[in-house]
Length: 347
Image 1: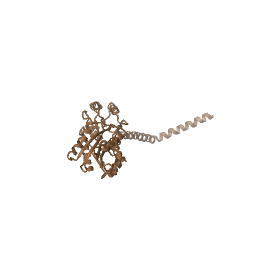
Image 2: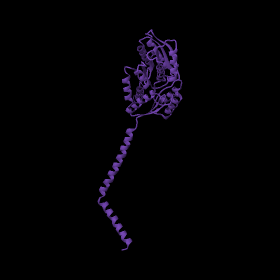
Image 3: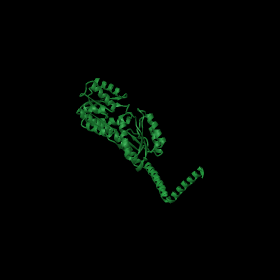
Image 4: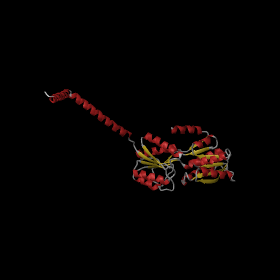
């Protein structure tokens, strides 16, 4: 037998042994193949199930006034906490700095994208109404937050009653001055351009003071340039002839600016300050008795309740047209506790 013939002979014997093995163990091999196939199919089904389970219930679109204000950062924290509980996705958008036109652009994108719902801040003197109506007209519910658009078809507004906020500020001012004061008010139209909200706030403030004949608002100033403007206004107040001994500011920026000037001019103790906000600097001034106290909206609660309101609209088709998130009042009596709670929320 030649070498090639011998090699072919051995190959044929090997093939024959393989066929004999397969023939003897056909059932075992078939069972192994079935088990492998079943395992693979089970893995695919499990992965598909995981994808289905992890898929969010809704995709909501949120538009804030800006990215830099601590107020809106806290709104976002509340929003994200509620979104996690409700297993939904929220797309967060905002201009870097105040820009109503940029807010409108984001709103237009949300409407065009046909998201499941829109939560949006509304800037004054801009045409939010038509875009909000366009959204609701095609079945996209809209919740306004912090600033409302009553003329639109929005489903609900989540925010603070401005009248109650002004009332709370007046109550603080009465305590700070013992019911006797010549008051200067610094109103910020740059950070809060909505005239309706400002008017309600001042109405609440003045209506509470009317029962105290020795509490008089002597002058009202308008701030448009942030801290620098508030400092300049406060300088004019301290240099004036009106014997001002109390200042009420309606924004956190003006509160800081006015307080800094009072400190710089060594007038701490002779000027009672009631302001707005809860920045670290403001809280430090409160703890040192430089600012008597501040009032403010509850941004975390606004974010949290706005998302829950959207869930109610989607699943119950029923929600209150106004959800009041209340007024926070911060004084030296509760500033330490307030800071601890705030730190816990940010963790």
